[in-house]
Length: 387
Ligand SMILES: *Cc1c(COP(=O)(O)O)cnc(C)c1O
Image (tube, rainbow, N blue to C red; front, top):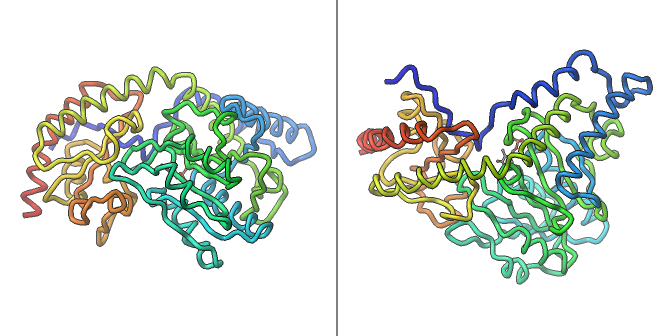
């Protein structure tokens, strides 16, 4: 066991807070603690900082015709978009058909499933073996009663980047609401909403070196999204609850830094990613890449290995100081193969042997080399334990 090594390779699960973001947030925990809804000057100053954060995000996304609604994170943004939009569209038009990709984050897929209990009809879009949704397939499946379409932008388990601009165009032409979960993609791809035709998009700050527990839903102002929680009139009556002012400041600052430094960090991360993917596939028999080899998140490598348990592999790696993931959130008890891996045609047994390695801005080539040199031993041990 290597007791000294602590190498974090799970940046798709969460990232550390950038120090520049922390510095920007700190005053809003202490001196500037006002509630933006208060009438007095503390409240006014807090309101001004929330509005300037909203403005910053709007400008970074070229989102002039869009509303930025602050939420508690990616999960809430997805819930708000799927349930809020579907219910409001159904109320106005009677449309109750939902077209959702089978490679969505559970925040989207479980929300869509919940709507089936309210007599919505849920249809899963087909995906190919890389996890791509074909825009032509979306066009073919949109019906007169289709209320919304949802396709994840950058997939969190397999890294594939979907052709979201083409899918959103298809939906726009048919006047169908199109939601995309960009919680992973926003960290790696420049997104400009003015040209995109995306109707709504989910962000979460902790996936791009911002704080946990804060996110945003950005949606086109020509659509109505119903609120999910009752209370005060914050966020244009869309999201009741006192604003998380330090979080909102942190989200905007983290997103600004991410956009400014994206070229540099994506370049660095994708070089390490390709080095890692190449070495793993070459050195380890019975290994397969999951997701597309090129059209994938810059920091994201994901595999399945024959004849082992992914959970065992994670524990062996962790004991050597390497923090990785199996890709899906399920951690304990009776392991179930990931829905995403099954959807792209991986057999259930292989799907239990998954590994996700995600790289960060600070990850070094030596780190990846240390990982590559230990991985074959870890795989051998995991296979012996499974045999
Ligand atoms: C992490 C993640 C979420 C959930 O975001 P939280 O801010 O953690 O709630 C949703 N979708 C994707 C693709 C993610 O990676």
